[in-house]
Each structure stands twice: as structure tokens, then as C-alpha cells.
Image (cartoon, rainbow, N blue to C red):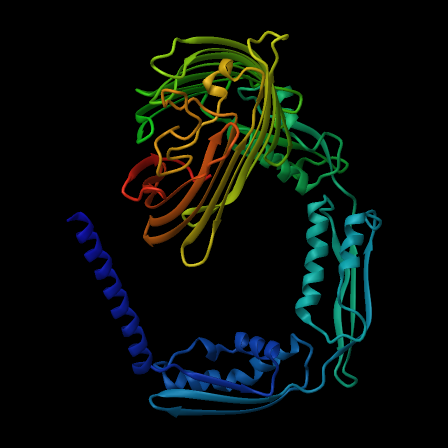
Length: 585
């Protein structure tokens, strides 16, 4: 019954849309619009003339006296429009008439000969004359002798020179000479621009207002130093770095030019701290793990050096974990961080039963943008079994690892456009504090690409491989499984993989899963999805499992809510429901 009501609702909306479009089309027949016809000009000239004409903004219902007055003023406006493009001798023929309760205008225009540039003299004078950033502007100038005069290009050059001088600290700049001279008799023009830069201003000192962090630590975010020349781009970059630090919510950098002495003035930095303590809580549900509770705590300011403490707790009947992290910014706090972490995980699902505890250290280096290289060393203790009929095994490992990850995403409507990927390698050896020897590379990538008409393509690939001396001693958290809402839909959670003699899934050495999904927006924040998933966890022979299905998405303020109906291609009667709250990337 609910599906039928939803169908009626969508059908009703389409009917309303059809009536609206018909009304618009019919209205176009009932209500005519004025016609301004211009003959004799090229596209650029005509566009500029229409922009200058006051008649262009009038409607049929405008008073006749107003139309006649604007029509009388039109020749002067046409001349200004063409003069801006270098045509000073237009010949204009015009006609105004009324037809079918609306007015019509015809302009027949001969723009005449163009005004040709025969001399260009653009110079930067004074102390800044040899600066590279001024030379770049002069080299980029596109106009040359023999070109037609264009006033907009001339004004743009003036603006670029002045803006660059202001941005680089030459605040006393002025034009000694600025003129565009025309000779109507010979149809020639000369351009003269001489910018006097004056002296450059410098930063005498940087005054950082006291905040929760030390002045020394805060100064690490500054890309401009005392004694350097004023540079607006570097000040803006500093503002961005402070804003992305997660320590401050209000940031103000101001160069005190009014306090300048001998072209030296201070730069003041005023910062408002973010809240020191952040507490979060939430609840959710997915078909793989059931009802979930989550809680988090973050302390941004353990000390004046920006040390932080982060904890996250996730609880469910089938899988729970607690993660703690003590984070220490290093010499470059935006790029280099050292953290100590610890965590415990409990999982008891149909095919996995384990308890895991770990403690370790991680060094993270941001190489470029969101590209992060991380190296870590953690000690893992795990108690596990592969079947309710098997005894528990205990494993301990000293696991070094390295990873590289990147995330780039921008919001496009209700979708994200971008990608993320991670490549990591973990390993352990019996001779170095471990009960098993293995090495395991993994690769994960996901791409989201909005298309036209409210559509979005989402693709995902997950790969893994393991070389191990004794697979029976490898803990379940380092084995590969497939199946479930974030893997191969149409199959139960971690139900795909090698099985033992009792038929229980025991995980595999290798993993390959992939997914291709298309979403289409249907109403406000609602979309429909169609998808195909494929994958397998295996030891020797790969046996790809396929799942296909349809889904509904609701883009709420806390993230996309997903409901999928999926079936394995081998049994279309075996319907699986997957429900979750997750992000698009």
C-alpha cells in the first residue's frame, strides 16, 4: 500500500510539471516580447550594443513616451558601445514601430573603420621596476601595434598593474601617465601607462594574540616571517593554514599600515579558540551488525604545544570497538604528526568470532594536499576461532606497516565528486616477537562522479593478498572475507570465502571485490540506485560471486541513508536487505 501511495505521489508531481510547462508555453503565445533587431554588426559588437541599450530592459507594457525617449537616446548609447571596441565612426539608421500591442526596433549599423593602435608604451617605474611579478604582467600583455583599440583591455591592464602593486606591498603606487589617445582623422591611437611603484612596505614584527596554544607553536603555521616584504598571497595562505588546523574558529590577520615607520609596520594575528572539549554520540542500524551506539570525545588542547587526545567507542551486539589516540604535532604541525594509539575489538558474527587488543605508534607525513604517508608499528594480541566447534587460538604479533592514502572530494549538489584511495602493507615475522610470519599488501579505491540530470556514478575496488607461513595461525582480523553491505551485496556479511570441512567460512589469503552503482535523483533529497557487485575471498581458485539490486537513498543532514534490495545472480529468489547510514566516499 505504501509503494502504491508513493507511485501516486510521483505520478501527481509529473502531472503538475506537465501542466506547468504547458502553461509556460501557452503564456509565451499570449504575452509577446519586444523585438530589437540589429543588422550590420558582428557577434561581439552586437552583444556590446545590446548591453549598452536601455531599451533592452523594457517590456511591451512600458509607456509609449518612455520607449520613444529611450529610442531617441539609443544612437548615443550605440556609439559608446562601439567606441569601447575601437569603432569611432558608426553610421546608424533606426526605426521604431508598434505591432500587435508591442513595440519593435530596427537598427541598421555600419560600424565604420576601426581605430588602430600605432604606439604602445607601458612601463613600471621606481623601486619595484625590476620585480619579476611586474615583468610577468608586462609579458602577458596581449595587445600589440596594429590591433584594434579595445577600452576594456586597456582598463584591465591598468587594474592588473595596480592590484599587483597593492598585493605586494607597494601601497604608494600611482600612475605618472595613463592615457589612451585617439586621432579620429587618421583612425590611430596611442596607449601610455607609466606606473610609479613607490617603496615597498615590510613586516616589522608579528604580534600573535595570546590563545590556548603557545606563541611558538602558533607561529609554525605562519608562511610569512618578520622582516619580510608584505605579500598578500602569503598572508592569505597563513589564514588558510590556521583555519585548517582545527584549533581556531575565528582568524584575523591585519597589516597595520597606519603604524608604519620607515616603511615598516606590524602584522597582528587575532585567534579565537575552538572548544577544548568535544563530545559526540549517535545511534544507527545496519543489517550486517544490527543496532549500533557510538560515542566520541576529543580534547584539542592537552597543552600549549597542541597535543590532543581522541577516543571513539562503537557498540553493537555483533561487533564493538574502542579506539584511543594520543596525538603530538611535530615541527611542521600541518604535515607531520606522531601518535600513540590503543584499541580493543570484539566481533561475534555468523562466521567470525574474535577478541583483539592492540597498542602502537604511528608517524604521519602529509606529502601534498591530502596525500598522507603513514608508518606504524603495533603489537596485536588476538583470541579467535573459526567455528563454534573449534577451540580458541591465541596469537600475538609485532606488526610494522606503511600506508599511503589520499582523499579529494567536493560537494556537487547533494553528491560528492572525487575519489579516495589507500595502499598499505603490513607484515610480521616469527623471529621478531610474533607467533606467525606474514606479509599483506592491500589496495582500496572509490570514485564518485556526478553526471547530468541529477545522476551519479560510484565505483569501488578492493584488493588484497597474503603470503603466510602457516595460515591456520593467522588471526581472523588479517584474513579476507567478502559479502555484506560494504562488499558484495546480495550475500550475508562475510559469507564469501574458503570453508572448512564443517562448511564454516574461515577466510582466505586473497581478496578481490568491486562495485559499480548508478544513482538518479527523483525527488528533493531522494534518489534511486541500481548496482552490480562482484567479488571473492579465496586461497587458490577464484570463484567470483555476483550480486545485483536496486536501492533508495535519502541524503539527510548526517549523511546518506541507504536501503538496498540485492540478490545473488545464481538465485534471484534469495533477496537480501542491506540498510546503513554512511558517507558517499
